[in-house]
Image (cartoon, rainbow, N blue to C red):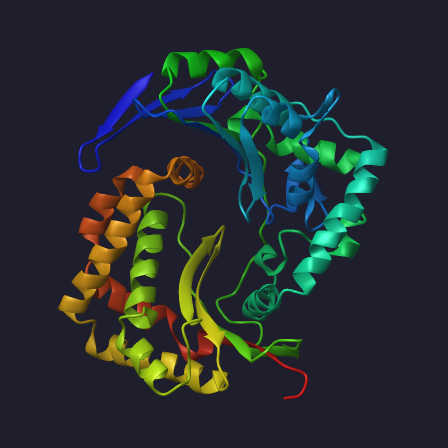
Length: 423
């Protein structure tokens, strides 16, 4: 077992890879009562087309999320209830590129860890339970349809991308999930829920040796093959410049999105993620000249905000909120990006934003969940998230200026709007 100490952030990580390929990371927290376990697979909403046993499979949109729901079923009952009886607080989530199962508990941690590893690695589906779940997830999807932000965000991605599976909601549609069967779920579990495609992260006052021993005893001895995935070929151009609809909202809402150049896995992935976050704050943050100008003119209110996101083969920066003149806001965002690209970012403002971003990353180490998820995402994308101080050191204001110059362009922008029916 390898121990790595990160002097600049004061954290230690124990790393071990089992013969079946499972990567295990343990972050010791002596003296803490709570312990946290996160067991994840590199399989998410975008992984709908993949190769299994020499043939390509096209699976229904929403199947990774559907599988997450069904994994808590066991031959004996329900793993959620089992964990809750032991004083654990369990849950799960599906993102575009990952599905994670987790719990925290102060007592019976090792027993709870055995339950977690067992139910995630041993699927149990029946035709009846799969059909019943369609109604439950269908109701969840209908809720999404009524959510204005979800609608405007999904529309933005569909306008931005021609064919990338990022266009499709993680939950899928009522029509797409109607094609999911127990057999399809077993195929997806066989492909992606193998130890070599997964990672276990544990944070707390635990024995690293005991964690490794439990994982070795509970999980399958074989790791499984590498599964080729197909995310399609996506051009740099946007699919359409504008999209909109009417909904029962109190005031017009919008998102202006910019299709950015993605990064390959590795440290470049983390570096682009940090540069994109800094660029977003420089351009759109609450202390930026643009934000203050738009607010003073009454074009935005406190709902306005932005973010930079990355997925497999995908990267985009977006901003939005309530506004009675979304086009004017979008034009001002583009105008400010052009100015920054031309004149450069102020060194003083760059340092201010970078310090704030670094501080946010440092504060993230106070959350056991954030630590575990960050380590897992880093492992799946080939970088070490605990090296963020060194990566921050390498980022200059010229990097941020170049990001804005290359990505925040009129031809890369889409505008997604929702207006009340009366307007």
